[in-house]
Amino acid sequence: MAQGRPPRLVLLHGSDFLLVDEVVERLAPPLDGAEGLGREVLYADTVTPEALVAAGNSPGLFADRRLVLVRGVGEASARVADRLRAAVETARSRPSGWPTEGTTVVFVAVTTDRRAPGLRLVPDPDRVEIRAPVGRAVPTWVRERAKAQGVECTAGAAQALVELIGEDLARLAAEVEKAALYLDSEPGGRRRLTEEVVRDLAGETRVRQYWELTQALEEGNRPRALHVLERLLAAGEPPPVVLVWVVGYVRSLGRALSAMADGADVRGVGAALRGGPRRPDFAVERLMARATTAGVAGVATAVARCYETERRLKSSAGSPRALLTVLVADLAG
Image 1 (tube, rainbow, N blue to C red):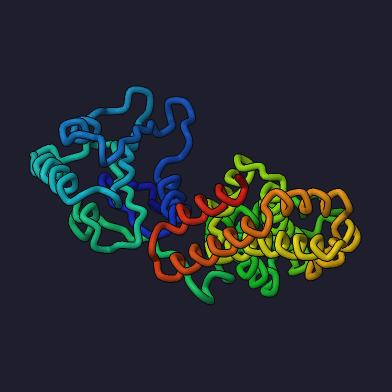
Image 2 (cartoon, helix red, strand yellow):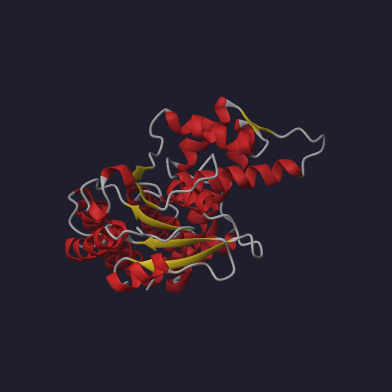
């Protein structure tokens, strides 16, 4: 690729979608008139062997070079993989070869399973593994990512970012990009990413989403609560951490109910909700209303539901996403 000679056939595989897709983008620069690279996207679970071979044989109509991208190879069944592999082997055995000159066929497999059937689509020499950094290499990757955007990222900032976000490279890349945009607006023009800036930006986003989840539960807004939950899970938040925040909401209900049983008013209930920032009176009133609606039996049931969800999460008895979705839907109902 560095020498301007893209491969005719390659299978890219790795555990991280971002890294794999960035290599795909290097193989397929954006369209730019007649000098660009045409693209055709196929999917392993729906494309027929005949359609795949035909796509690899088709010359570019408006470009000198073409890219045929086959996604979903990592999830392909053994039957699908065998059928496609047989078609590829037959096409490549022809005197003219396959794909046609000027066309690159890229199979993409985003999977952690190195024994996935789809990886057998092509021989070993045509497979390239895109390895993601892990452990101590992740903060180094963050600093290199920032450097590529013209940002000087301190070691402390990189470590803080990983602590706040985790090792999800897509989220880390998004936070680096957000920080770069923020630093562009800073006076002086010095684009230096410090730990303080990271905690202001990344930490604020995470806490705000959890705050939104708690607000939706207190309001009994089920659609909103499920929407925020989906955003948190899609962003890679660990299910046990999400559960802790949900349990915090249930604990607040119980404390409010107990204080109200002792005759406490809004200020008294607010004082009973220790362990967090002081709530305004309207927020305490809203929680009191929810606690009154739930009652002792409702709070007891909520505690039991949280306990059962935790037990099933720890024993891998069910999909974490499904368990949390059902729990939040129940508590916000």
